[in-house]
Amino acid sequence: MHTNLLKWPLLLSVVVALCFSTAAYAQLTTYQLQDWLNSPAASSHVGDITGNAKAAALPYRRFCVGCHGELGDGNGENAVWFLTPLYAQPRNFQLAIFKCRSTPTGTLPTDQDLYDTIGRGMDRSNMPAWIPLSKQERADLVAWIKHYSPRWQTEKAGTPIQIPPEPEITPERVKAGQDVFARMQCFKCHGVQGKANGPSASTLTDDLSQPIAPFNFTDGSRPKCGSTDVDIYRIFMTGLDGTPMPSFADNIKPDEAWDLVFYLRSLQPHNAYNEKERQIANQLGLKPVNPNPAQ
Image (cartoon, rainbow, N blue to C red):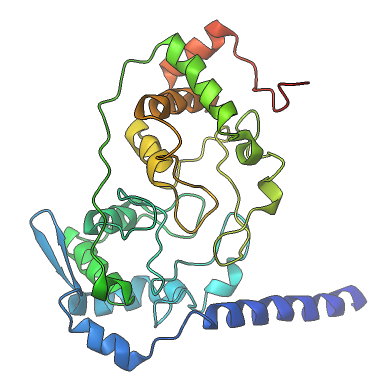
């Protein structure tokens, strides 16, 4: 009984801290949001589908408000239960900072990016794949998301990065990818074997100072922004905004990014995407990178 009583003040302090940290970002009023709901920015264009924000009011209330909140600030009634490295606080749409984008770091995502995230979901989070939604409902929700942030009133989406064709997988490329992994010190977060146990892993936080875990390449989970080689390449070159994962666009060449994709594939459990990379790594007898090569 005494132990349980001691736990309640700690739990209460966590809840209060969450509420205050989130409230600091929830500066918009319902009047401002209503005004933006009528602006040209509160629309979306995905292929031949045009999304309308007003049409998404009911789907948002039914599927999204519990986590993302009435004001889109990530302060829904369920949000207080998500404070763990794997289940971070729901996305604050007012900030318009998104992990999964085809656009350069710091820029707004395209409508297609947001549409894809709604349909794909975010693995290792409480954001599911909203497969039951129709294409029109997803496009409408994209428009609804955009009405929450002042950024959409003055900024346009960034220009998607150009991704060169995927080269052939060779032993030389897999080994070169390991060299890139070592040179860029990816092991500091992801660990020398890609197990998310690097020396910095336990200290990582996102831009809202919430704990966040690096991706574990060995546990079979899906990368948050897609599972294909192209998806992983895109993450390297755009970064995951709002997280410690930076863009490498200014630090590695496109060929080196492909090499890194192939090496990281070799660390993953066998799946439909990495059979050749794993075979090559075994043939080469690749060992984990040495974090202290001078020693």
